[in-house]
Amino acid sequence: MKPTDRVALYARVSTQDQTCENQLLELRRYAEARGWQSVEYVDHAISGAKDRRPALDQLTADVRRHKVSTVVCWRLDRLGRNLRHLVLLLDEWQARGVAFVTLGEGIDTSTAAGRLVAGVLGSIAEFERARIQERIRAGLTRARAQGKRLGRRRNRAVEALDGCDGLSHAAAAARLGVSAPTVKRWRRERRQGGSKSLSSVA
Image 1: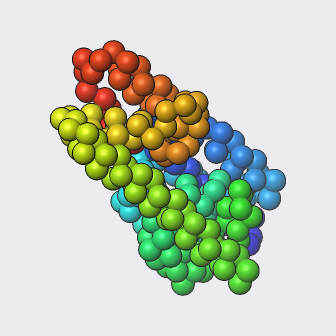
Image 2: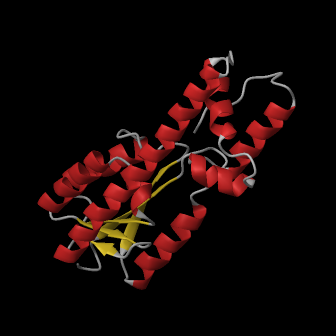
């Protein structure tokens, strides 16, 4: 790749209480070390399960206009957690001669080995998301069996917390796929006796 080629740095976080800055610092260092010109595409508070995101949509449009030669992400799950969406994106970029690089997994789709690893890791990301959804559904079923009558938002949060008793905020957040501050807020509201609805799962 020529130093004059423009590289896209893509970063994403799922909730308002998270920041992309740590991702961006590493991405900028990576681009600068290689003498690459870069432009940043950042999605705040948007789930990786969503195919449509403002910054990702703009990135896709710029790829199609041949404004981007390489896309660099901090980790594969920042780009997405839906395997089908990931595969479609990477296939389109490859067809347009655009490489995809992740810092965390060392993926580089300009190589055959990189394309293989990207597919495997994408499957793992989708599997983990499915596990979280299964735990949520199981908690909802358990809550109904116990005769709990809860509002829709409160129901989702309470049933999710039911399977995390004894875990730290950080451990519960990792299990549920939300931030630690979100888990802390849910638990505080639950202790208050349900005087207000809990926030929905991020």
